[in-house]
Picture 1: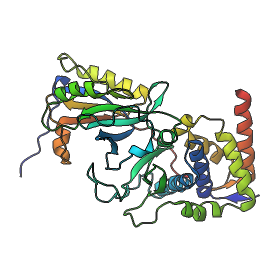
Picture 2 (picture 1 turned 180 degrees about the horizontal axis):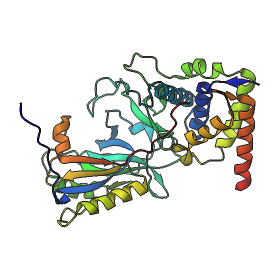
Picture 3 (picture 1 turned 60 degrees about the vertical axis):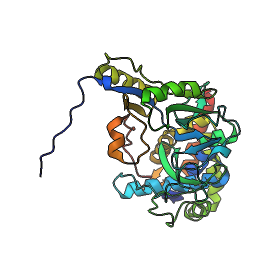
Picture 4 (picture 1 turned 90 degrees about the vertical axis):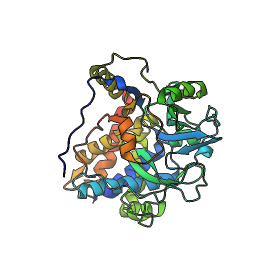
Length: 184
Length: 186
């Protein structure tokens, strides 16, 4: 029985959900890692919210914004401090960062901190099963805390001690997808 | 050292205008640009804002995503960016130092058009409102999924100061409590 702790699974889950909400590939990796870090910090701090990143000096309206300040991205019912490029794409999340120099959540940090922890033979089927289930919801439905509520369901249904049974998780996701499709 | 003396709320809320408080991005529209509260220029994030980007005075409002032809409960930045949904701005004030709020809101009504509309606000002439009325508005805001209510003191000027004590004397935010999760560990 292959098992894994919840952090990388939660990161992958949020990455897939962000894609369903319309974020582009690199954005989804920033957000996936950012949400996972947020909940890890809360777990360590007894449920307290982490301090927001300092956004640097405020830039007066009307001046050039060469150095972008963070804007909060609402995802899964949480506000993630994020930096954006000039077209509005999320370039990195700064969850738990106390200064702009602290390690932020980027596509590279997602690859190293989330996907690299998931056994390669299960990553594809797992991501696909998550995608299939989340495709049964409208993007607007995924803007709130529903993402977390579904996660909570599979976390409990597939738990193996403090870890998650990966085979059971894939089956659970497929089963829930079928149930939702047949209900339509 | 002097003992602290608490201030009483007035017996009735007649000193305040009440506005719906949406849960979007606080933005400023002026001189052909849309700015965020933190000074980021997001004009290029959307190809079809659907309202005048150069109003006579800076308009302060909440950027939301359109849902069923109405301003939605919150914003959807990737949706607006990719054209999946339309932007809506619910304008709640003009950033003009000097005129009282009643004058600013009257001017705001003339400036809003297209997908920018004024925030629902109680009638400045009303003088018989009670805190029970405010409570009803608060419950409506909660039912609609709004962030809460904003109480603005009548005849108050617009404050550009970051001095919290000055601003909070004239603007009071009644925030709908966020739903608490019993489980926080991933």
